[in-house]
Amino acid sequence: VAMALGENPTHDAEAVLLELLRAPEDRVVAASARALGQIGTLQGLPPLRALIEGGSRPIRIAARDAAAALVTRLGARAR
Image (cartoon, one colour):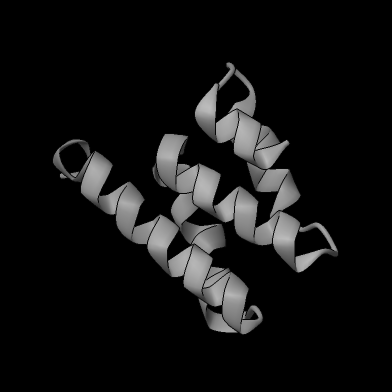
């Protein structure tokens, strides 16, 4: 689901992905983080930062990469 939302975003995709960041399965959380990096807004940064600080290693890596992608993609709009 997370990968599909990242590749084909819908109006509610970011909200769904933010909810999936709380899933019990690491692979779902990591996939959701990666998808947020592709389609998310700055609203996704705080939850990604929380995962960087407190997730398992695969989740921390995915969240770090997603946060970097968001900042890179949205950097001009964030200023």
